[in-house]
Length: 319
Length: 319
Image 1: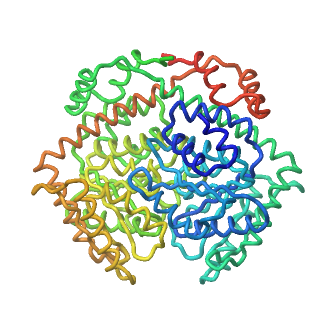
Image 2 (image 1 turned 90 degrees about the vertical axis):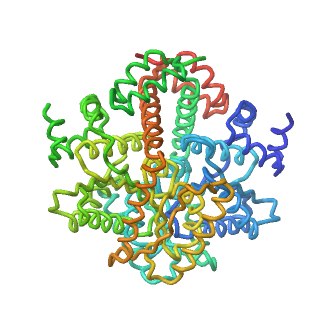
Image 3 (image 1 turned 120 degrees about the vertical axis):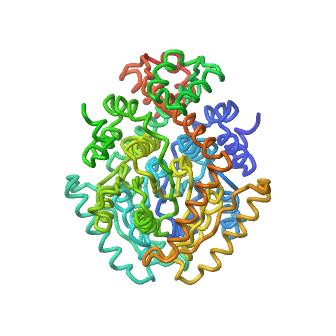
């Protein structure tokens, strides 16, 4: 298989093919990743997350353009929660490609869920590694900041950007509390809309509260800047790029970069072990017996926990 | 423990306490659920899902009021994705309680994530069973329709309502494709806003496309109605309640109710078995050895899949 050398050369078709293999999660993907892993660890991985309606896809596109103008090469992994069902991810790619197409220094890929969300987190992490190994100097990971799994994905980045927008309504605002805790840079996008100043102030207040309660008072601590952008016309995007660069410098100077790399490696290992164990769990229970238990459940003659106790003893890790 | 008889009597403090135990997922919750299970199977479980900003919490409140006026008792389980971090769920409850407080025929509970999203799905399913056993005739399950786990939760309902709103921006619209496939009733809320008619039309077109491609052409098939509401002033809520009742009648007349009950029982069993197996997985790997593997990963001397292969053989289901 010449997939690996082609990926290392940045060949776009090889990249696309390997990431599809990763989504399928079979032995060919694992073999390729095993070889590619030694080439990883150079890219700056930047997560961009926020609720629907904040305009984060547009912001990601603008960040990619700005990074290109500054000489970086950019891989983009967009995690799309619609994908378990239909072609949402592909459509998303097409819309994006209009703007960034034809630039060999940019590679964009939407990740589809095939199966579980745990699978999506794994596949996203592996796609980031592929782009890292292929030599992209920055990898942007875009996720919808709703749902634990999506937040977990954002969390694996070196630098996490949380995108807000003014006037999105109460249940969107309620998400802020959770996202604040993982933000390294806060961006209020659509800042030409009414209420932008209040949103900035609210975020600043929330930051102060969070920092006091968590005891982040050291002189070397990073305070997430709160920046305003209008991604549609590019306003403020330069400041976000500067904040990303400053955060990278901070991580490296403070030793946090190495610590995050180590945490990421441990996470990767435990998650992969978990996944592998899970896929090797086997229960020696026949179809007919399972259906008998379901019958008894439907008739309320037993309950789920009793049934599980009866079946558990015949399950094992099959290696 | 007199928790179970008190739950069966609809005692609110007992309900709240048992659902907290369910979130903690320990033996006391399981023992109670094993007893309660035989009292379940009577409630009409209605999922209400939609993107942030669609106003689905307000709609759920209005549906609950309308159901009460029609003589039903209503349990509400609100699944809150912010909860892994902070007190979002509790605040949500307080906001809701203002409106529905003091009515003994309504019980509201937000579910917090303690740990995994799989855990949230399980806990939500068990909370629904508790409210069912306690005699609530309708249980409304409210979830944010973003993220696979949230959609899975909505899926376990007898009747699933998908809430949209006009003008929420492209990435919200993109969610539609996925949610359409699980919708039994479609509601365009905030229908007094510009663009409501277009949103209705777009949903009707999407429905026609989906039905043709899926071959739902039988005379007995259910076509999801597309309804307009302004939940803030209650407009259109009556029609949604009629659609919920009509869908229930359809499920029962067609035999689908029994089929969904059976599928739900099988899902419950497999999910509980999975969870139990997972919590009994044990690897005989010392902390020091694990850290050695992490060191080697950080130095790129090995890769995750090689490490997993080395560790796998020492893992087993410990019963």
